Amino acid sequence: MLRPSRIFQIWIITILVHRNIWKLIQKAKQSISIPIIASLNGITKGGWVDYATKMQEAGADAIELNIYYLAADKNIPGTYLESTYWELVREMSQILKIPLAVKLSPFFSSLPYFAQRLKEAGARGLVLFNRFYQPDIDLDDLSLFLIWN
Image (cartoon, rainbow, N blue to C red; front, top):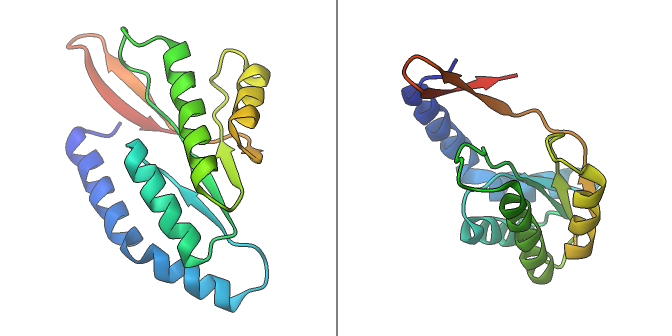
């Protein structure tokens, strides 16, 4: 189980590691002849678009969107979450000149329908399946913890 302070530490480490991602993409592009597919995690639509654009400019041949929203709010329906994925893919596929793939989890109620909608939104590939952390709820105090599997 990860406590909130540990989660914060992981995010800081991730940020420090990825500060020079542009240089890493450029160096990889110069060093090898196979296509470079940059994998991108994000939180906000603006962040997704900004980082994907910079990865494209650095020389990535394709972008893999590693999308995962932890559905912990009882007031947000699954259909809303799925539509946010489609809107993000639509917007990014209109901005980017390189192919866009979406990394999926196995947790959609109708994976074939969801995949078709991503294709219609502009995804050029799907990556199956991703391994995510899962929420664990302490029933005594209703606190949320994260479990990596």
